[in-house]
Image (cartoon, rainbow, N blue to C red; front, top):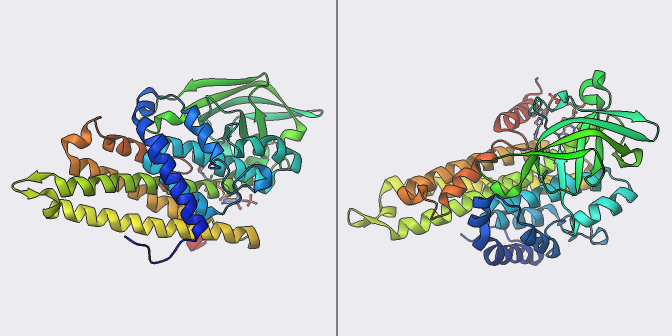
Length: 387
Ligand code: CAA
């Protein structure tokens, strides 16, 4: 389908660069890394060289200096080939770099964001704990100030990149009595003592993106590694998640498209009862629904990308647009992956094709960076003004 709206030459260029890279470098290794669960360091390094690890970071800070639309276009292409690579790209761009761009001091940007934007180092974002997921303001980990350091103790879970990250953006409590207003953000250097990479999660999908628990045992964090002021952490975490959710929506779109394109090809070729299966309404209506939801997702994502650009000049939040894009695109990814398995039938269930991987990878997009239930809560609260 040719798009009714046109992308600029610059946007077409990054889209093509990401598509070509994904086809050549990622697609051929996706199944192998899914099977092993190993972190794909080599392709991630190359993605850094291509500028994909800091698309919106200004060039003087090691990034590609482009806008959010460029980011979502590139991420969609990477995720069409492999959602695991997309998760790593999304965390580095949205959850890590974006936090520094908005809240980091010049020194923090130079020291931590520049190497991540260049793809030389891996960044992570750590908010969730074993007993605090959706209810993110109730964390039990603690940072206690002693002179010009904070002593951090506690356990964090579901950290994307946890087993390999060089730097972690950690959200922890400095003042539990203040509840979410007592959360503070810290930049954690994985080389320092007291930082322990704990249990690696055996995951159903996005298996190559490496997820683990992190344990902090009397970790000494210098005051200059605090991001923002004491108590700013929850707002930083939420602001950053708004950006992250646009990334996950783009990831979901990439998975949905991969599932759809494979189904379309199969429906045109596979025969049953003397016809192409695409000639049966049972298949063709599925394809029609998949395509329509994909294009609707794309529009919501582009709308969110433009809203995020608007934030740069007006400061107006893009929470609503980001949540709607993530909600709809992630449910579309699951809808499309489910239909793709059904259309491919036995072959969809086989590990010989990537269809079953799309099905497994799609599920996480309805869970991480805010479940579909949380997106509905955010959207409903913003629309009704009620709580
Ligand atoms: N931007 C800026 N500030 C925001 C905000 C946003 N999007 N959303 C809320 N806030 C602010 C509010 O204005 C409020 O500020 P005040 O204290 O000044 O009033 C404060 O944050 C608290 O807001 P709420 O009262 O709305 O908070 P709540 O406790 O009701 O929770 C929530 C809101 C939407 C449920 C939130 O907790 C949430 O999004 N939960 C889901 C967490 C999540 O997505 N976790 C995923 C972690 S990352 C991950 O998946 C792993 C990975 O590595 C990829």
